[in-house]
Amino acid sequence: MTGENFLTDNPELYEQQFPDPEHVAARFVDDLVRRFADRAVTTPRLLDVGCGTGRDAGHLATLGYAATGLDRSVPMLTYAQRRHPAVRFVQADLRTFDLTDRFDVITCLDSALLYCHHNADLTVFLRRCHRHLRPGGLLLAEMRNGAFFLGNTELLDGIRTRTVTWHDVTYTSATRLWIDHRAQLLRRERVWTWPTGPRPLVQTSAWRLLFPAELRHLLDTAGFDVVALFDTPGPRTDPPWHPAAVLSDVLSGDRLHLVARRRNDAA
Ligand SMILES: C[S@@+](CC[C@H](N)C(=O)[O-])C[C@H]1O[C@@H](n2cnc3c(N)ncnc32)[C@H](O)[C@@H]1O
Image (tube, rainbow, N blue to C red):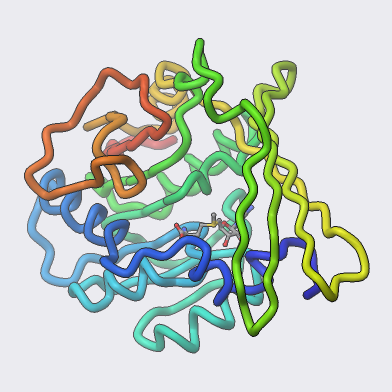
């Protein structure tokens, strides 16, 4: 195994580590579109930013969406295109993508929005989304909730160890999360070891810690109205999303779910 990120370089292993056999994330998107879309569209045009293995875009295509997936990882996109030929996949960075299409829905799932570490990145990304949505179109995002960490350290205590067997090799990961207060980032170090590995593989990631009021302000500035902002339920909460769910806006949970509508103004 090689590369800059063990999981994004090995998409099969990514899906094995984070299975979604019931397509809960894609169904969550479809249910929110049904609840909040301003008009019925026979084949909604949907862009999934940070699409990874393409499984969400792939399932949404089977539900009648004209789906496009966007990611910067070539291994992810190669795998996604092979698995989901009905979906168009585009290699681009979420801060600079520039497509000719206009979409009814843009999705940004599993904290992909939080790869925008700086306010300038967030502003640029939301303006990109504004430009690529039709007036009235929806931006749906699902991510970690910065507010969860106010007085809650349960995700920060200790090192979590997991093992996964892939192609007859057992890999062990030891994951540590901590808060970089100055940068307002949640940082992660994950150390992979395996019997035939020459040395441990150390990988680091970081997510912006965004607070609900901050997100509302950024969206307003970029030309969006917030239609719903809730912590539970969602595709990665317990209990998980279900179509008749009542949305909780207490916002103390570890996940934040956003539905925002593009206003008909310039961002
Ligand atoms: C945690 S995965 C999420 C994949 C998928 N959305 C899901 O929910 O299963 C994050 C994805 O974001 C992509 N990504 C990270 N930074 C990015 C950037 N700046 N521009 C585009 N994609 C990015 C990674 O390559 C990876 O595929």
